[in-house]
Amino acid sequence: MISLSIADGVAEVVLDAPHKLNSLDEQALADLSRAYDDAADAAARGEVRALLLRGEGRAFCAGRDIAGVTPESDDAQAYLGGLVQPLLKKMSAFPAPTFAAAQGACLGVGLGLLLATDVVYVAENAKVGSPFAKLGATLDSGGHWYFTERLGMHRTLDLIYTAELMSGADAVAQGLFSRAMPAAELLENTRAIVANVATGATGAFRASKELVAHIRDQRLGLWEAMEEENAEQARLCKSEDYAEGFRAFQEKRSPVFKG
Image (cartoon, rainbow, N blue to C red; front, side, top):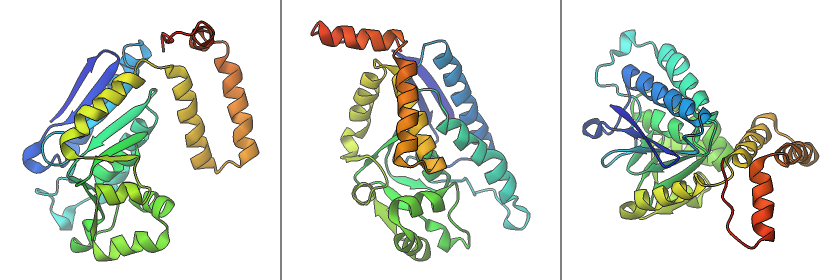
């Protein structure tokens, strides 16, 4: 089950099947995609200025729900290429800052959901890695790119070959995610951060999000990236939030951004 709630500029998307560690079958992926569509529509109306993704219960997401999968007839390409990859692209392109709060198992497709999110906070005791060696399968949902980019080739293949899992604290220490927190504090702290971001200059945040994606995907050099920065700044200087930010600084008060 996937739920979406919107309040005070924040969309909160919840993976709500704790009895199966929020593992995702085809229907759940479709429901999750629909939730992001609905949140994006609300963002276009100015009702959403940040998004939080989380999982209910003791796990964020244990990956694909394989309980009913018959290996001999399984169409992994249809599941991964036809359902998962389009969803991850949609999540990555969400038109506002996105955050995830992840506890427990963060595996397979669950890991993919995190790599498609702008900022990821994990519980210190979260479990991250590639358990697929025990299934005769391989890491999916962009995991090879993500691990190689962040951890390097040797650590990536070590995790894949051994199926050993990292704690959330280790994953942050090795550069996979942004922050690790005690599990009991994770959701409260993340919600507070997301609520604050939702009051910010959403247009400027979106510009940075797109620029970072260009640097990553197009491997921009310093001067190319600087040229894009200059262009974005020139565009932003015509916005209401840009003017408000400068006025607030000059008047020594807190800015009130409209997003």
